[in-house]
Length: 205
Image (cartoon, rainbow, N blue to C red; front, top):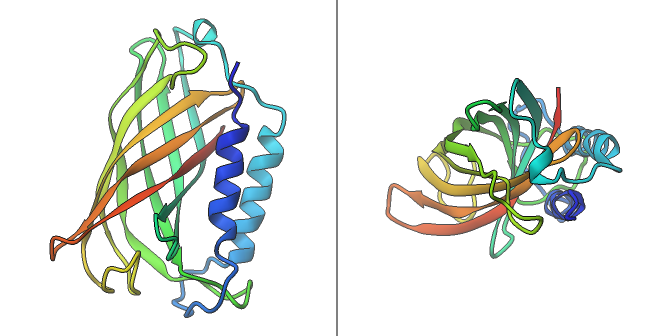
C-alpha cells in the first residue's frame, strides 16, 4: 500500500528551498515563518495517515480538503506556494477546487519578512476519481490550470507578466487527507515556457 509520506516529504523539500538569500518585502502579509508553521500543522495532521485502498473510497457523500500547493521549476530558481481547496463528490466521482492566495520567493534571508504576493487563481478541471486504480496508481486525476501575475520575476519570467499554467494533478486519498503530485508548464505572454512540478498536501475539513 502506498502512503502519503512521499508527497509530504517533497512538499517540505520544496518549501524549505526558500532559505537561501534575500527576498523583497511586497506586503503579502505572509512570511516564511507563516508557511513553515502551516506545513508543520499539515504534516502533524497527516503524520500517520495512509492511502486508502481504492475499494474503500466512499461512494456516497461529499468531502472538502484544504492545504497547500508548492511548485518549483527544474532550475529551482524559486518556490510558488498557494492555498488549496479540493471538493469531492463521491457519488459522481467528481473532483473540483481552486488554488489561490499565492506567495513566491526565490530565497529568504529574514524568515519574518513578508513574501511577494502573486495574483491569480488556479482551478481543478475535468477531475475525477479513478476507481480502477491499483495500489501503485493515482486515484484522483485532474487538470490544474489558470493565469498568474507576480510583482517580481517568477521562475525566470519577467515581473508583472501574465503567465498561463497548464498542469496535471495526480493524487491519492488518505484516511483524512488528499495528497499528490503536480507537473506541467508555465507560459509567458512572450511565448517562453518553463517546466514546473511540485506537490499538494491537504487535510479534510
